[in-house]
Length: 142
Image 1 (cartoon, helix red, strand yellow):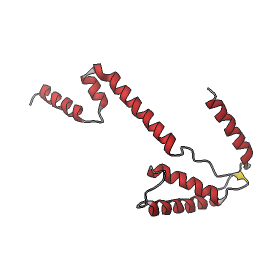
Image 2 (cartoon, one colour; image 1 turned 90 degrees about the horizontal axis):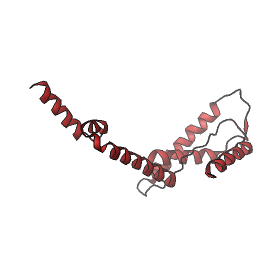
Image 3 (spheres, helix red, strand yellow; image 1 turned 30 degrees about the horizontal axis):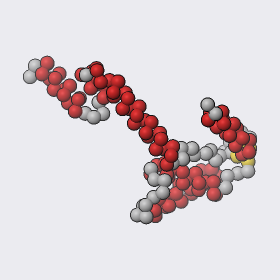
Image 4 (cartoon, one colour; image 1 turned 135 degrees about the horizontal axis):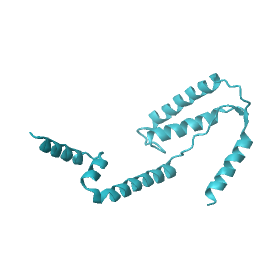
């Protein structure tokens, strides 16, 4: 087999590979804008789904005054398990595994928070909440 035929077969294999979008652009430069459009569309859809179904924001729990409560640790654990599993609310078949994962994550998180040490002074929850509200108001006022 000569070098030209070998090169042609490699290009054909690359075109068949779904993940090789850049190889397709080299072969057919007229469709690169379509590939970018589709990639951007998929990114926007993913952000929309993620923003509407699950909480994207897991709060920092360490080094606050007053200290974190068990309810806050459990809420953060629930957010984490929702994010990892992709379920906002699990089906009946997955509910036991989902709740067991939340309990395990909460226990590990509580253990972690008890064992962490810092020299920084504790932050005030009300001040941090006011700062977050100010940032949100600035961000969403546009």
